[in-house]
Length: 292
Image (cartoon, rainbow, N blue to C red; front, side):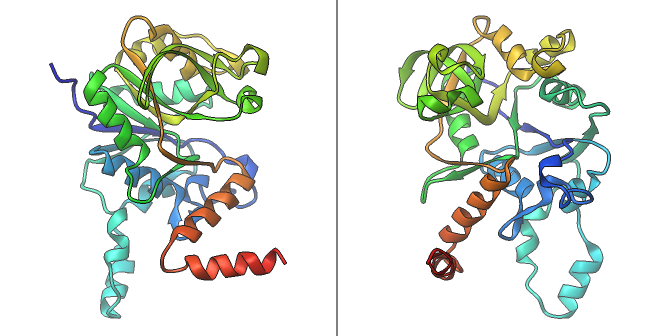
């Protein structure tokens, strides 16, 4: 039988964005622009490319702007129409009523808790998870990370995580998989280790912010205690499911930018700008001039 389709995606966006203060004092970090699109828009575009229909934002106090971004701004659109402006630039922000849903994570108890907060909307369906801090950019002419994962899911079912290969000296900063049998970009996952010492790391394949999980993970999270950092960790819940359901990693064929750090955000902005046909040449000239 074919696995159930992936129709829903959860976006944990309740964080305070303290590393970007004072910019994030009022504006949610997920709405900071990479060139001319908010960070969250890139994740939603990636989800839509993969055929996902319903976006579930797990928000916190002061984060309502994320949902408003996907609403119709009547006054703006009316003014643009009266002035003969092209409204197509707003197409990516439009959502069918009911396809954007927000739930509150009332206390900051970790990523696993944030995902659990969406349990009633996820229901008994497999679902995707996007960490918007991780900006995943497809190669020119290629497909996005989640679309690659959905294609793999349709083949093997079960649970999947996206991974990237990094130099071994960097693995202690990430979650790392213990790999099993590998075939193409698909690797069996036999275990997960959070931030291992380099000498103890089972591989150089790091978890990179995209997941497809079966609904049973919600039942695991329901009764899970706090883990590293005093938080309810999604990694711990996934580790408990390994061996009970198929679990694979998809090595993403593309680039990843860590927009949770200021340097990574600048890197992402430069990379996206340089790839744009409408500004790439000018940005390259500016960068070369600054480097003189």
